[in-house]
Amino acid sequence: MLRTLAMIITLFLVVSTAAGSAWPQYMHDAQNTGKTDIAIQEGLTLSWTHTPPQAAPGWQWNQPALDDEGNIYYGAGYYFLSVTPEGILRWSVQTDYAFIGPSALNDGFVYFPCSEGDLYAYTEDGELSWSYPMVQPVNCGVTVGPDGTIYIGDTTSETVDNTYLYAINPDGSEKWTLCFTEADGIYTTPALDTDGTKLYAAPGDFNFYAFNSATGAEVWSYEYNAMINLLYSSPSVADISGSKYILFGDLGNMNAVYWTFLDENGSMRWHTTMSNSIQQSAAIDPEGYFYLASNAGTLKKVDTSGALIWSRAFSQGYLSNPIVEGNGRVLIGTESGYLHILDQNTGSTLESIYLGDSVGSPIVGDNGEVYVLHGTNKLACLEGELSVNEEDPSSGETILQISRTGATFKISIGCNSGECTIYNTSGRSVLSETMENDLFWNSIDYPAGVYFVRVEVDTAGGIEEASSKLLVVR
Image (cartoon, rainbow, N blue to C red):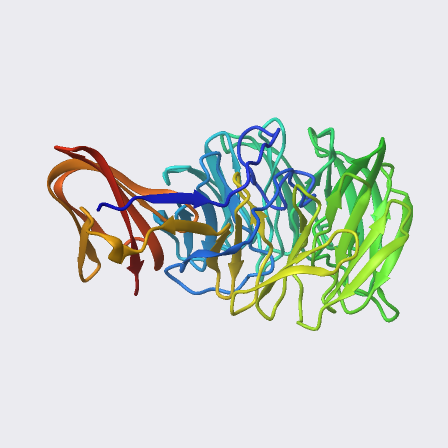
């Protein structure tokens, strides 16, 4: 008797009101909020891992980005990569210098800063469109405004003592440039006001600035009280019930380090102390809450008045940026290799997923899957579980026969024609083809793991179905 297999994919239907990519730039949007309306899938497990051609550090700041087809973009060492939602390399480009900061996407282009001093614009198919010369954009990410303007800063170097902040048109031409002569560099991703009229950045001169995003004119500045003039905490911007909040963390002084909250006029609303130093960006829940981390392994939730809701201590070294998913749960990575999913009301752990080495800032895809860079910039995809209901294979013969030679699987359906589909563990199709008698699938370009093959065969007795599991090993 032929057996049939019903594949039940435990994914949850997610509807996002935002158009385009689920995560197009650093911390999700031009305000660096780290908040998405998409809820993560339940029962996340490791679906696949993509290892870049070159190992590279930078897990804490380097966050991948997604286009509107779900393709992933990130840099590792001297390579800039694009990977499909199934974990298959689409393309890679290489330079003589390292890609360091997070990328951003807009209108079919992806922008990425390289430590040689250039900002590159690629098409989503990997063709270089233009490059813009800079000094040294170390750790700086790209912010894209609603009109397509690209904002990025750089740092000083051994030969250049000035710090620059750039506004670049979508065609790669200069919109405006600001020069800071007594500053040590922009090490963060700028942020835009919620109406797009102000740009926020800190050039490394003990001041935090608001600029007119259209002209570069200074609107106001705020002098922060810290022993070190640099900021490694990218600013975040919130508009909650008509009140605006601009927040950033500093590297500290002899007494403490601060998360500082400013109003839209540059006046301090309040600040809250943390221990060690702050290199993270805050995550913002539009319900009126902020999630603030520090390098001491502490994560705090505060409200719009600065009142502490809860504080959570991790004994696992540095923390990544926190993010907030569609149901309000908080995701955060740790240096010791865990991705934690936290209850937003208490800060308690709902789930911990161990990835083996330092875990960076996660992002959420269109279907609620989670992507994160960890260790030496390996890209991991976490997805909901796939459950399979099937009869005992010993209960009868199957029309489907599979054999393997090396990385190539031979899928046979006898002297018949049919349709063959191969799924990964998330239920995504990695191959769908019409076949006659035999089909050969080379798994060399696919991540290791379990796959499912399903055939619908046109036989003399009608359409018959059969399925089996495949194990891809390396």
